Each structure stands twice: as C-alpha cells, then as structure tokens.
Length: 331
Length: 153
Image 1 (tube, rainbow over the protein chains, first blue to last red):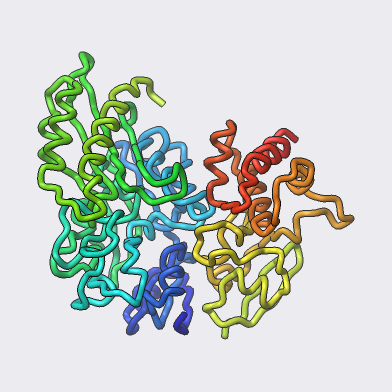
Image 2: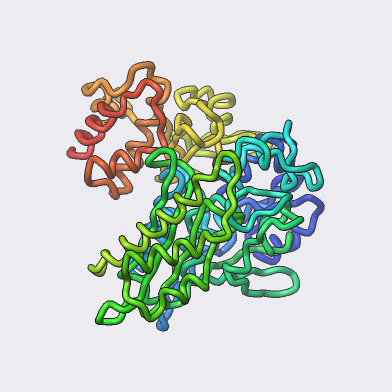
C-alpha cells in the first residue's frame, strides 16, 4: 500500500482542519478503506483517524427520534435496546451484513461511505469509471452478475453494498454532517447518488465534511417490518437482492402507510415512493403485492449475467411484504 | 514511523512502526506471535481474528497505530500461565474441531468472542455468528459441537 502519515485528533475542529490537507481521508473502522488501500484503489497520503472524537452513543429523545453517533459500531447499534425496540428493521438489516468481527469494527458513519464491491472497481487491470473517471466500464460487457438493474447509466452499473443503508432509507434517516462552513443535514434519500456520468462520486457529502450523527425520526414501523436478503450463501455475503419493508396498519388491517427500500439492485438504496402510495389505504393481498412489485421493477434493465435479478427482485419484494404483514407480534 | 504501546496477552509492548503496518503484521512480524494467521488479508476468512479491548476483530483490517493503548489477546494468550488450556481450546481438542489447523486460532478467538457477546443461543445462531470464520477443511460440525460444550461451562 502507498505510504501515508497518520493523525489522531481529539477535537472535531482539529479533524476538520486536518482534512483540508491534500489527499487526506478520514478513517473510522477502516474495514473497507484499508482493504481498498491494500488494492491501491484508495491512495490517501494523510489518514485522519476520527476514533478519538466524541461521536459515540445512542440517544433516544422524548419524541421517539433516535440519534446514533457516527462512531457507534454496527454491532453496538444493532444490539442496542432502543434500536431493537423502536427501529428493529435497522437491527435486522445490520445483522444481515458482514460478520460479527466486521460489525464490531465498522462504524455507522463509515457504513454510509462503503464503496461498491464491483469486481472491476477493485481490479486495477480493468476499466472502471468509478475508480478512474473516463476510462470506461468493463462490467457492462463483462461478468455482471452482481450488478445494477435500476438507475444505472452507461458509465457505471455498480451497486451499493450496504444492508444498513437500505433500512436507513426505509426509515427516512437524516445524516448530520459538519465542516468548517458549519453543520448541515442530508436526507438519506439525497445522501447517495445515482451514477449518471460521475460514478466516482458515491455520495453528496463534500470531501471536507465529517459525518457526526445519524438521526432516525420517530416511526410506527416496529411491528410489521421485514428485512429479506437473498445471496449466494446464507451468511457473510453481499446481497444479490434485499428488501426492507415496513407497514403501519389500521386496526382493521388496512395499510395506513408503507415503506419499501431495496438493496443490491442500484447504485444507492432504492426507495420507490410511488409504490408506497399504491399500498396506502389498501388491504394487504397477494395481488396487491404482485402489482406493486411489478411497478418497482417496471423500468428495470438487466445485462447478460444479472437478468435474473428483475424476477428475483419482484419475488423478494413480495415475500418481504408478506412476511412483514405476518409479523403481527410486537417484538 | 509512529511509537505505540500495546498490551499483548497481558504484557506491555512498545513498538515503533510505519503507520501502514496492520495489527496482524505487527503481531506476526514485529512481536513473533505467529499463532494469529494471515489467510486472505482482506477480512473475508477470519483467520486473523484476535480479541482487542474485549471484542473479536479482524486484525488484518486495522492499523496497529489505530490501536495504540489497546489490550490485545491472541491465541498465545488464552491458556493460563501454568499451561492449562482455555475451555474453548480444550473443547476444540475434545471434539476434533479442526483438520489442518490453519483457521483454528481465529476460530477459537472468534468463539471466545461469541461466548462473551452472549447473542448465540441456538445451533443456528452459533453457526450464523461464527460465519466470519471460514474452515476449508469443513470442520464446521465439530466446531459447533466444541463451542456448544464450551458455552455450557
């Protein structure tokens, strides 16, 4: 890996000043960044270790919203009593990803910035617009089994790898960030980008901005929720397709509101607001779910090796909705 | 070069390391603790699992400098000073929970972490929460049996 100098600030203001140096990067858990540095895909010359900053802790507010510090580990978040009680969908999604060792290391802030596991992004012998803008995309004509079917472009067909972010998208999380210019809040729906012609930009976070916190608004989705992940082996693998589903039901069973977000299908967690509106006010049924799933994938386009994801995606969504409804008992 | 101090298996060690030295390389190359194995070096196999500040982690995916001041337990540090093996080590021998043995230090450290975390109750939960450790010999049934026995103690 390329040499770099290492800094461990204890104050956020120092971290924000050190990140201004040329080619500097923040490091949290390091589980993705160090791997990419070993492959020479990431080559920072300065690493700013944020682990000594005061960005830990999970705090539940009186209105039911929950703040998750950027440095809270994935494991601590998933097993936190308040998350399990008020946002069990997030727990389920986090625990569907990676391994216990990685979840102990990886931070929630860092998980938002995970990069794609597209083989061509990792392999410097190939063309990749995300790794080297303008070089081309070897995935489009290559082995593209794990790639996107929704929202992709002629520049990039990579998918976002996170499970956590799919649940955050379903729960309308807010990402709080800080820079020398002050603080701002980015909706999770605006945080990750579609590739368009600039796939090198995964997110709308500016290079000098530090994620400080994830806020989950209060939600009524602690009963009828489900995270279904389908992959090539039953654990410790990235999703081929995943579906985070949450319903708020009337006493009579009618759907008061619904949230749907999918992973493994696009460059960002894929929310379909129109599909959610199609569910609102209706009674859950096999036909309704099939119609909604058809709608979500109506504009999907597959490639030589991932065409199966369109039908798989519809089936995973229908099954996840069905299981969410069946989960009648409060956890 | 960065000066750091780590407490490894109860002993304080001062090291001067390039910041790009992983914790795994610091253990193996600088401290001669070669029990911890380098399998994939990419966090995909679990052979490098150690216990750092009470939690199991992949030592290949962290820089040693980031763990300055931490307490690390490796496979060499699990047995008691007199040589009495850790219950997970004893259970692995009793249940023949390995063949070639290359993944075993990572499996055992991971198992110690799993028991401490306390989230695994059923066989399926143990399998799921040991999924970060790959065994190419396929000793999984015996690893499960060994961990069940160690958990019951």
